[in-house]
Amino acid sequence: MGDSRNSTICENLHQMLTVRKSTNIAWHKSSVEKFDRQELLQQKGCVIWITGLSGSGKSTLACTLSRGLHLRGKLTYILDGDNVRHGLNSDLSFKVEDRAENIRRIGEVAKLFADAGIICIASLISPYRKDRDACRALLPEGDFIEVFLDVPLQVCEARDPKGLYKLARCGKIKGFTGIDDPYEPPLNCEIVLQQKGGDCVSPSDMAETVISYLEEKGYLQA
Ligand SMILES: Nc1ncnc2c1ncn2[C@@H]1O[C@H](COP(=O)(O)OS(=O)(=O)O)[C@@H](OP(=O)(O)O)[C@H]1O
Ligand SMILES: Nc1ncnc2c1ncn2[C@@H]1O[C@H](COP(=O)(O)OP(=O)(O)O)[C@@H](O)[C@H]1O
Image 1 (cartoon, helix red, strand yellow):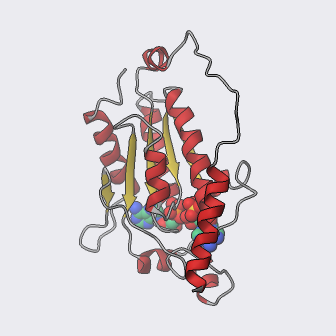
Image 2: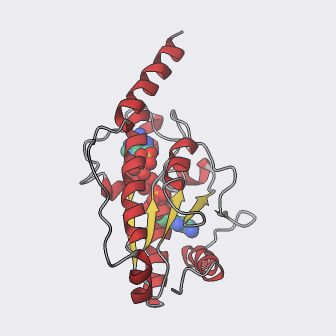
């Protein structure tokens, strides 16, 4: 009973957040389009969406990937969940509806970056499949590249670089992903990165896997 009431409240809140309130608006076209910007940059705009548990290595991969692409002369921009929550999303908590809004806003911003011709790297837990799929739906087919950092909870917890798992385990943080809040792994994403037989795969090897994918799909040329 309580659960179904909570989920109705969440659904209503979600609808309130996503209902369109801007009316009487028109779309203005520019004489400089995405195609022109991509020609200028010699690359194709897209979104690389890195999802995974806290401590799985999302920020590390985002930075390594950004550096690797930069060295190849490609323009990137990172939208890291932790960082965006310092500014644009500082009004959002970790409740289910606030996580949904965090992801929705980052998805919309990522879409703008991709339209600018930039390779946008979004790294955030984004624990719900529905929210990630909604971001995918914002972009043209192929331009949303979901990368799942498939690192087991025990490994993330052993790393615990910020001490957050420890706080979550002793109840000082409530609703921590993987402990007392859900994480829904992707069912069919573009890239899955895992450790190999218990050995760590280095962040630069992981970044190379992503760069090879981008190369193969033609994103590193106009
Ligand atoms: N309750 C709870 N659950 C998970 N994570 C928490 C929580 N509270 C704070 N943090 C810190 O916030 C970072 C995750 O922010 P995100 O914006 O990526 O989260 S989400 O996508 O909205 O779920 C996450 O950063 P990462 O460790 O880099 O993932 C944590 O540092
Ligand atoms: N491929 C990897 N192999 C081993 N350790 C890693 C790897 N990537 C990141 N780490 C380490 O794991 C910890 C969490 O990484 P971080 O990038 O902050 O994760 P997240 O952004 O998902 O919370 C850090 O101490 C980092 O040095």
